[in-house]
Image (cartoon, rainbow, N blue to C red; front, side, top):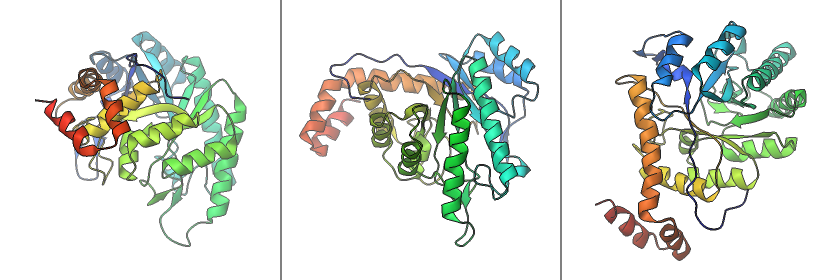
Length: 328
């Protein structure tokens, strides 16, 4: 993907992760109660400006026919099916990199099923963050075997069908201390090693922050490699993946992300992975979409050509004087 010449404001497509309308808890406290899928879908429909939803397989597909019908009844598009191969007990030793070949085969089979569901829902995209794959200690795993298993598993799933894109999401840690796809570099390397046009990357802003990456820079790397498939927006303090409302901590990173998405003429989805620890999830998602839209409007006010000029000049003091005084 090349940077476009000239400026035309991109049309944003906002997606809400339906799972985040339900139970939210950490090891100390429950912040939101459990809600069934029908209630969560109804709540999502009330979010101002929402265009689509991201749904999780297998958790939200216990009765696949009923789930598909419920989703289609909302009238909302499905941005992606999120494959969860981490949270059930069977995956404790890994999914795509489990030492047990039967478990590795199960992970591949689940990915194939998620791909079929994505096609049935007209999404033609799955996203997967293999958080249970990696290690916690030195001398715990064979790194060479793990990487080969991951490559082989994703390759086999990708051969299942070429019309559904597989978007791999990286994260530094959690559940493993060291997740096998911990940063943009490793995830791009995997994509290039596979060499398949329908395998790419989900760029999660919060995960980039925790990895001490500059989100907009990583966005450009993935896009220029032709691997930017999907974007998750949220925020944190660069020390833990708190899934906060975008722009509440790293405002300038949000603005820079929007600047480069615009330059890249991004036509994909922005999906919101944002937790609600205070208030209700509808209010949180209302605010999230409003803030991202406002960031785009702020670019209009600041002037994209003016920002491009500051980048060309390369003098941060002058740029930030303009940025901050423009907010007055």
